[in-house]
Length: 503
Image 1 (tube, rainbow, N blue to C red):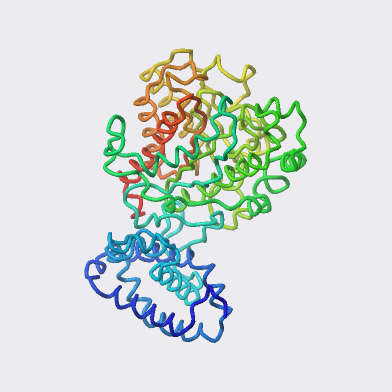
Image 2: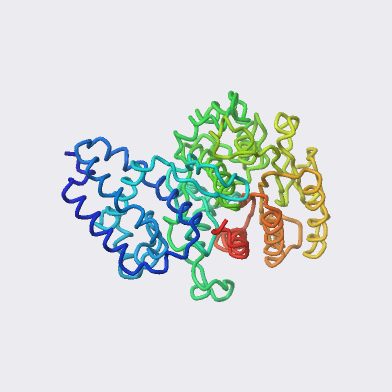
C-alpha cells in the first residue's frame, strides 16, 4: 500500500473524528449566506484535487470513504464558518484556534492529514459541481473554474477579512546576486518577509498594522512552477505574445552579448536561476489575473516588466508580464474559461520610467484588446519614448499634489474612453523622492495615496484590478521592500473597505 494514502480504517476514524469536531460549537454558521458557503466550499474542493487522484487509485477504499462523506459533507459545509474557531490557518477550512494552529503548520500532523483527506473525498463526490457567484464579473449561475495558474493555493479569500489575495514564489529572488548591482534582486524575498513580519509591534516607526499583513508564507498563492509555466502556451507565440525565437534563445541562455547588455544583466542573463525567476514572475501575474477576476482584486509580489518588447528585453526586464497577462485574460481559449468576458485590458503604469515595452505590443493594441497608460518622468529612461495609448510626461521634481492632479485627470479620461474590463496596475515606487533612479519628489505618503486612489477607483467601478510592484532602487533594500509593501497594504485596505470576501 502506498505510504501517502491512509489505510481505510484509519481514514474512517479520522473522518469520523473531524465530523464530530465540526459539529461541536457550530451554531453561528447557519446565518452565513449560501453563496459565501458555496464559494468557500468550491475553493476547498479544488484544493483537494491532487489528493483525490491518489485516493482514487485505492478503489477498494474510496467507495466506503465516499459513503461517509456523502452523509456528512452537508453538515460540515454548513458549519464551515464556525470552523474558523477550530479549523484555521491551513489549506483546509481556514481558521484554527491557537491550540491547533501548531498542528496544522506541520503537514505531517494528523490534523493536517485529516484536512487533506476530507477535501479529497468531497472532491470525488462533487466533481466541481458547486456553483457560486464568484464576483461581479461572472454570472450568478456560472460554475467556479479551478485556479489552473496556481501550483499551490493560499489562504481562502472568502474567509479572509484582512487582505486581498497575494501571489508569491520563493524563487522570485535567488542567492549569489552581486550586491553592487543596480538591480536589487533580493527585494522580492525581503518584500515577502516584510509582508509576513512587519506590524506596529515590530516596526512602530512606520507600520500602523495591528498584525503582519500576511500571517504565514503559506497564505500566499503560488504560481505554476517553471516547467509547467513554459509549457502552458501563455508566453510565447503563436498563443502567447512573446516572439518564439527570442523566448527560446533566452531559455537556452543563447541571447547575444548585445541583447544582454541592453537588458542590463550582462553575463548573468544566462544564469539558470535568473531564467527561472523571470518565467515565474510572468506566471505570477497570470495567476493574479485569475484571482482578480474571481475576487475583484489581487497583487503579485513581483511583476511590472514593462520595458520588454515582443522580441527583446531592456531596462532590467526580459519578458513582459503585463502583455502576457493581457493576452491571457482576453483569450478564453487560452485561459480555458477561467477568465470570461474580458475584451479590453487597460495597463495603468505609474512607474517613474515610461512603459515603452508594453506600448510595442501592437498585435494586442491593434486588435483593441490592450490599452496602455504611462505616467512617468519625461526626462528619465528611456531616452526615446514609445507611443502609449495615453502618455503623461512629468517634469523633474514633481511633488505629491501635482502628481495626484495629473493622475486623476488621465486615469479618469482613460476609464471613460476605454471602459476596461480589467486593469493591470504597475505600482512602481521609483517615483519616490529618494530613489536613485527616480528624479521625482513623491513621498511615501504620496505613493500610498496614489495606490489607494487607483485601486479604489477600479473596485468602485466594478473593474477587476491586478497590482504588480514595478521598479524601485535603493541601497537600503529593506527600506525599498517596505515601500513596495505599500501597494499590497492598499489592496488590503480596498479589500476591507468593499468587503470583497462577500462578493
